[in-house]
Length: 192
Ligand SMILES: Nc1nc2c(c(=O)[nH]1)N[C@@H](CN(C=O)c1ccc(C(=O)N[C@@H](CCC(=O)O)C(=O)O)cc1)CN2
Ligand SMILES: NCC(=O)N[C@@H]1O[C@H](COP(=O)([O-])[O-])[C@@H](O)[C@H]1O
Image (cartoon, rainbow, N blue to C red; front, side, top):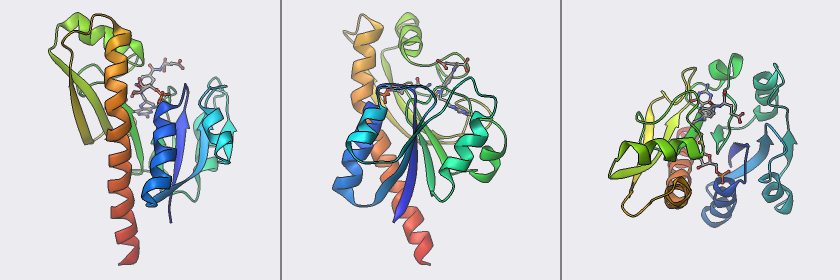
């Protein structure tokens, strides 16, 4: 079975959709959930008997502790994870860490661009469309190869919260689709 680790920092709605999809699809299982703070989303793990680990985002060894915890998994999924990964994990898990970002990268990404800040910037820009992006993770924030994008209209969205809610709904289907694709590809490779 294709095993994934899911990393969170917040409410975990993307984690929740991955938990539901893993049960529905049977293509992958969530081996561990890791938070870099006492995130509400941990409740989704505990309610589904999924092992979880809470780390400290201020810990200089955070990335190394994440690497230790994800060993044995096939894919690491950053689902609202707000710490920047550094060092050995990026080498050992090259092309095996993905992230979901709430804009159409390369626009509105990079250091400092997370959560509502992204949607504020999109609305301020006057763009008629926004969306979300699943991409590979490398040492440069939000600069890895794109995997999947989904588009939403910004029409009628007057607050960042309204746009966030619209984009978040698309994130759930986009992230689960991307994970299914990688799980099928990984399982097929493993069969060769
Ligand atoms: N090596 C990488 N690590 C991470 C990436 C990445 O592409 N490469 N993506 C981020 C997720 N992300 C956008 O999708 C992102 C997350 C956080 C930040 C940011 O500026 N964070 C603040 C701290 C915020 C907090 O802890 O509350 C900061 O670092 O000062 C930007 C983009 C995940 N990791
Ligand atoms: N740059 C990273 C970033 O902004 N990630 C965003 O954090 C939210 C987490 O929501 P969730 O905890 O409900 O899944 C999501 O909107 C995700 O795109």
